[in-house]
Image 1: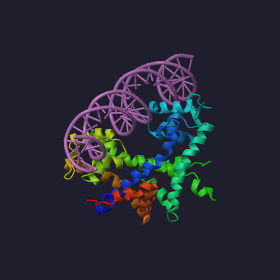
Image 2 (image 1 turned 135 degrees about the horizontal axis):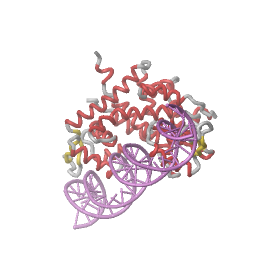
Image 3 (image 1 turned 90 degrees about the horizontal axis):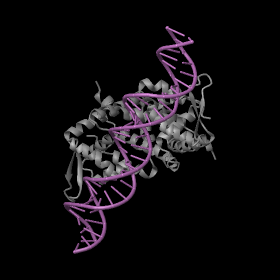
Image 4 (image 1 turned 120 degrees about the horizontal axis):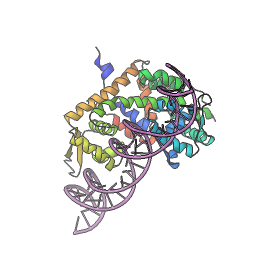
Length: 158
Length: 158
DNA sequence: TGAAATAAGTCAACATGACTGACGTATTTT
DNA sequence: AAAATACGTCAGTCATGTTGACTTATTTCA
């Protein structure tokens, strides 16, 4: 009965989300550029780092891109020694992916930048804000993918 | 002195931000696709709609793209009658941009989708959450751009 | 065991949306 | 009258995504 609650335009949040995400991804861009990498490389590196030994097909599921698309950036990351591949112990068709020491280190530099931005923002906000923010971002995800994402983000943080 | 506060990795928020933004932009993509438009068209249409009579150069400042890049999508939007251009009354070199009725209507459909996702999320959260979320997103923006963004988002919502 | 399915890689062609650099035209400013 | 400005456009490049077809190695299954 109340149209306003579910339909009222939220231009403020729509635009804030746009600008916030742009600057959030802008930090790593600078470092990536120096190595001739782009955001695609960042995403691959990140999720391999966070899921050591991940299978190629599972990585494709997370990134929702085609294997041809992944192939290009993955090849560069392997050639440049940021990621290494190992045949699966149980199923030797698989090429399990790991970050190399170089890859792990670079990955840490990238996520440090992003974490700094996040922590800086949170530190300026009332106590408990990070939980609210986490909840909001979680609820912005498609309902049918939430559990999968929840599973993904619940990992050791090294 | 406390390294943890400012540097500790926030993989959870980094990943939640990534997935949330993807699904947030995914809603409009479906509608845009039907018209042969992409996200670039969406951004142009959105900011023209929100800033009627905006100059081309100001739009470039907001989007932070080149005029050649804008040129292509803007031409399509004008050709397809979603945006119209009018010479500036004071400075006739300017081509002030406005959404047409068709453009305004389409724009409304797009922002309705995004607003619904936002309002749905907020409605599941404690009172006052939207203010926390707004604050967080605002603080995620580069410090030196915040005032400009603040100016932008403080507009009549029709 | 032999056929089918699976995991991964590769080649080719294409689309979108960014970019740089150069140049043109109308209009305003100095 | 010359310089600066607002905008548009041509041409070429790059990054990252897409389809579709095909290969190779390995595992599964009838």
